[in-house]
Image (spheres, one colour):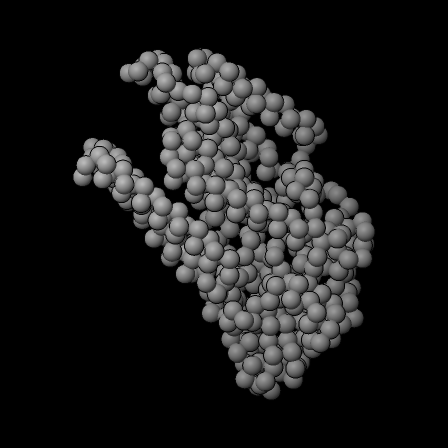
Length: 475
């Protein structure tokens, strides 16, 4: 292939990759087309890979293909083996890998291209755009990588999911941030003609800042944090594109950064909390007053039996199922679908109420229910389903807690006050499936459980739902 033909092929492949990525994002906006969107994005990645191979000297093909093969094996194995409950952790790890890749590329560029050993001489022909891009990509990529690892450890429960705070934490973070900015600015001003320890110090400080950035954030805020870190990775990749003069990285990274930023804003809106409160509020920290705010003292609740709930469901006119992380932990989504099928056979209208921050990552409940082949037209967003609760005979809460907590509406001192919730308390009857009386992921007690219309059904969610299926059949 001639040099001109090669250039035309690369440009065409890049354009097709951009188009498929954008189309993929568009289809991912709906659960009904999400799988189709993933396939379209995969085709875009094939075009991107073809462009990279054609624009690379043949001697480098083997390294690229080996890297692609290793990554493909890890990705396929992870996707097949990961449990749906662990999907947020995998997302955090893969997101961190993107940030880490941007960090490593910048580091390699610094030590190879900016060293005096470069054939063209130290810093020959490099402009301000490359210098600024390299520093920013290294810093943002480091923040994303380190922060994503901490998010993974929290979600995997290898460390506490509660906020980890200490006196003067914000001051320490501010000092480290100033150190990162100062050393980064020094490198930019000096065009990299500095001892290597300065870059290493900047990089290490950015990694430490990424760790300290996520430590004080509680598990209940993980959906927002994952979205934010995702946007960080996208921005780092886009900046790396300027560093390498690669349009593909610039546009694809911009798509990820923009979508992650929008999702972060939407998650914050769904929780009615500004991003600063999420990042610096230490929501759910131990030793606080959040439990007392929602209701002091031991909760007085009414328990019920499987047979009683089975009769209630069988003779209901409309049932709204509210899934939460407890359903995911018990892997009860298939049983929930079977229960809905049994109710529909009896003429019961079944709807699923999906809160934007239910679970531990954006869209977590949608993914779980899609895996169980729940019809998409039965999934309702919070704004669409809330008017239905006053006309609902039974609200069946399965492993959810904070997204149905009425303290968000009527307890001004509660940490979740003002957060839009699912109005389960407006249903005629409220059945809550819980493993125990432990508070939810946010560590806040739920006064809904003391509502006279509420009854708690204790036990593993899957086993309980299976028992409810048998009870409904027996009616």
